[in-house]
Image (cartoon, rainbow, N blue to C red; front, side, top):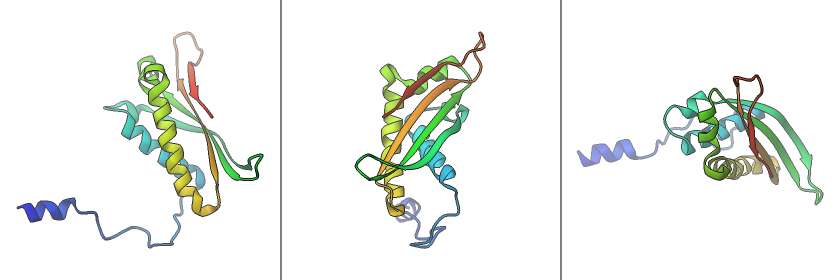
Length: 141
């Protein structure tokens, strides 16, 4: 039984892509996927399933010191005020943790394509408030 359980727990030896082969996902899809993974890891229950990601800016550029960077501005749109508070966390700490871990993963994935830095701005927005305005909270560099 132990050997059977170990075989299920052992990582697969079969991968969708061969080493060195690139994915056919666009840059926007890859960025959304990495941030979505961090949302699932940092939030619980139904909250991650209720978030819509909207890329506002996805732009390659250069920093003043000449390094190549990717700037990502993304809105995380939720349906209720309570979800805004859950995504933000106490003193913005949950959103900060999502941003920090996303930046690390994005930079790791983009390093092979020549990027040296990632500027990531995440904003939590409530899709419909009773008074017609959107609520917004963000974490940016």
